[in-house]
Length: 87
Image (cartoon, rainbow, N blue to C red; front, side, top):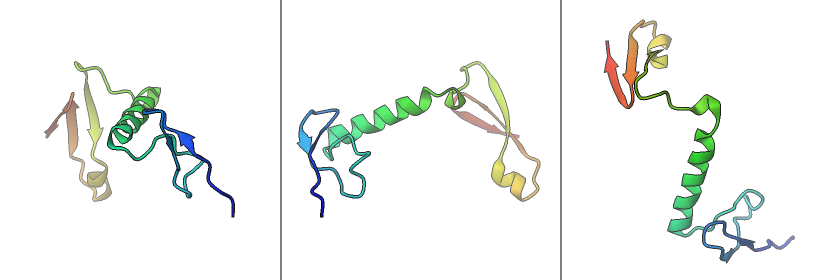
């Protein structure tokens, strides 16, 4: 059986033993501050992609609710910023 090598955490720079099932992808240790840094980094990476951009604050977007479309309802939802307005 192959031994697992220690890695250096990207946040606190301490050595840690990654989970054996995830050793090639784990970059942060299990400390609370490091988990929060990992979450912030992954959100930043996700939001940096053009298809995941949040619309400008003054734009309204018309969207159809997917669950409503499944049941045949044509109810539309307008949302502006973080507020949802159902019509």
